Image (cartoon, rainbow, N blue to C red; front, side):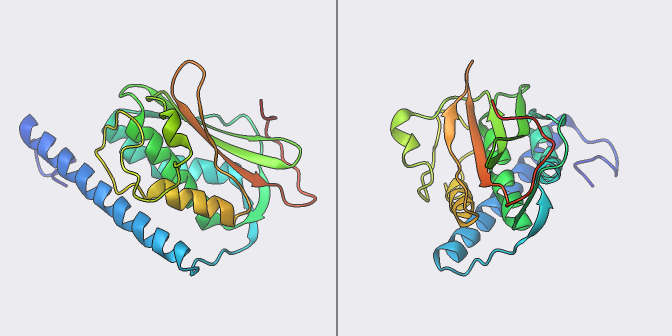
Length: 212
């Protein structure tokens, strides 16, 4: 309530303090959630459900969930929505978790005032959910260890402060459990892009555009 000034106007300095507290609390919550997820996966306790889901719709949900963090960091989330539904069978919660980690990572490294761009694509056997930013590129000697736990400091700059370095380790392991992959690559014109690659369920087709 204080942060939204619902109880009255606050001095600018107090608003800055409240924003810092809010960001710090959210960061700590993400670190705890990432660590618990990682331990559960490593102990073989994570069980995946199988149900039909629309990945294009899930991408929109993930964007909505990360909108608050993006606004706090001055980053725009730009979702390309030209295609139709993208139906596969898998675990909705696991896919949303991966997307949230990728989006939050892109927000953390993307320049303030710039955009994180998201889109869904397909090829003959794979569906692709892409998250792209204009932040600093990942050092070549780090790419191979992207998904190792507790690898803090993935890129030269990070606006939201250091986390525990567990989020991408969780995302990579969930992608593998789903039978997919999660490659990172440099983006033309600067920045990085991550692509969640998942196998299409047999007999299912979608209406989104083809992967470039």
